[in-house]
Image 1 (cartoon, helix red, strand yellow):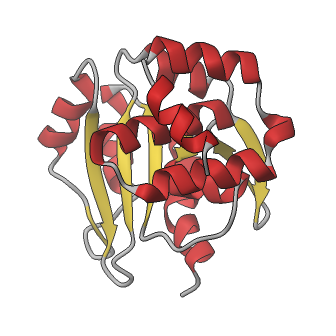
Image 2 (spheres, rainbow, N blue to C red):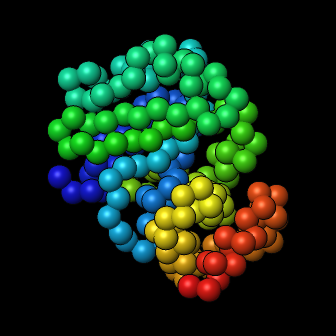
Length: 186
């Protein structure tokens, strides 16, 4: 199964849910930057507790690992960093699902998604500024060079899409000046 088809395993289902979501992480950085291998798709979603049953229904147990409903409910109700994984049994491909909670930055990004055509479907991609900021944060947390490489590719291939003032404002807000300087050295 081709990697782009693996993305659709999740996006096709989420498009039926009726909740706001966006693709971020390595898949978004591939769209804005350069192709590379990834083993998962990162998705931020705003979902009321009332949609949990519908959410679970879209990922049947014979095809997916899906956490217990009580876990999903607890993660949705967290103020920040609510998270779960959904895993496709046949391929092993994983979706990291992040619930938006009370995170203003995620709510900003969700209200500024870029809709792209992907194999005949419209899918929401996080704004490039959001993807860069999150990559800088992940680099700060784990020093994984892939995050800086992803940012460098986005800066080279999508520089005209970046609101530089907005990006710099967020870099200052999140205290990411040191990490940003490392990107500029690549």
